[in-house]
Length: 492
Image (cartoon, rainbow, N blue to C red; front, side, top):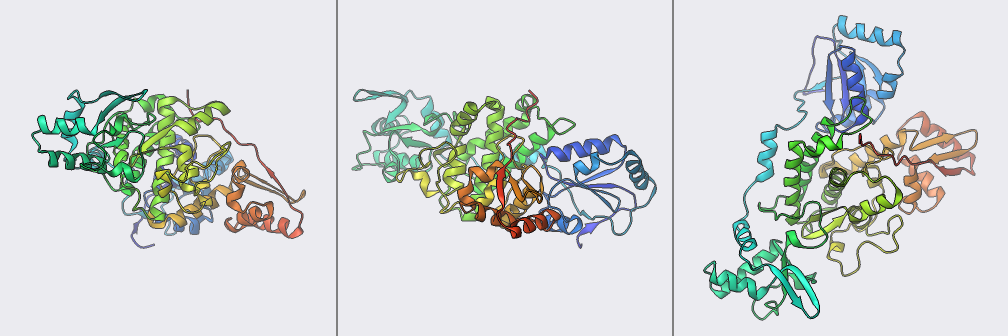
């Protein structure tokens, strides 16, 4: 346990992650007892995940220690008898910390200072940002007609080149090169054209009559649209982690004391949310095609979870099946010049372009440029990392590409420890699973037999795993699915 420090004073140690309602409730209970609480954020200290499991045999959070006595999680804390709880409080207040108490990291930063986040937000201003601002106020952008169709907020290649020559003092060759640069940097896109043709601008390319729009005016009103990203694009992986840190900061600060509800209304007027929205704009022009498999997994999982919360803040939580369908098919971000809805991210990118729930077609057609971003195969473990804002979802965490597979394995193992994800009834020879396994059975092998084997292979060592092995050994195991809790954790 090198690199850790200890204290002679008694303490309650809570291993937790930001945004976890069970962690918030546990800490609120402990504060009411008047005991010194030291929180260790395993999201910030990823090296502690393995050590936490060594100490407790569990992967879930929170995990709570009174001095060296392991109590367990939040449910275990709430169920403690009054006499036992008082004994543990006395232990912490009166007994010195023993040598075998759980260790602390040398530093335990709960969040980056606001000024540090703001510095990371802005970065270096792009060389064409001022030019684009001038274009927006030059009277060039307007409604253009092509045949019987009117195109709002558009301009032709010829109009752009003429303006660059007459108002910006460029010669024609420089103006054409600037138009090409604006396309390549994704400040603007051609109207109604995608793919290879979209990257061409200049003499002899047939692009002078082509219509263009600024990226902020294009497509389906994504939540990070309406304003052009004016800073030099950040690396996609760096940007997704900055977004997650801000959204988790908001999520933590606006949870209720019992951890069961979130004040989204209060969150929406928090200055930190304004900084988050500013940062989300920078997604417009990130470069996606060079991302590795691991980087794509971490990037799109983080972005999915952030987009759900952003959608809740802007539009409110969906309350019925039709609203949920609209929410997941229309709430979107503009990422790397293309619009990605929640469905596009989950089923198009992370599931290797497979049909989602209630979808008749695959998210991306063969000619859709977003298909280039999709992973080649479905990744079953993503289902234990994506949080759709319902109480039945897995907890929200931040993922990094460096050890993404082990992080996802830990998330699956932690999810399966809960009875609302997997219940084994030895008497009836029955296994009851979360609806997630029913909706996406194809990702887990497609048959009940393969599904149960997958579940068994991804369980941690626990009495539940032993029970499942016994049931499977008996043969003719019945598989059923538990009700899914779609209720929102919104306080309003």
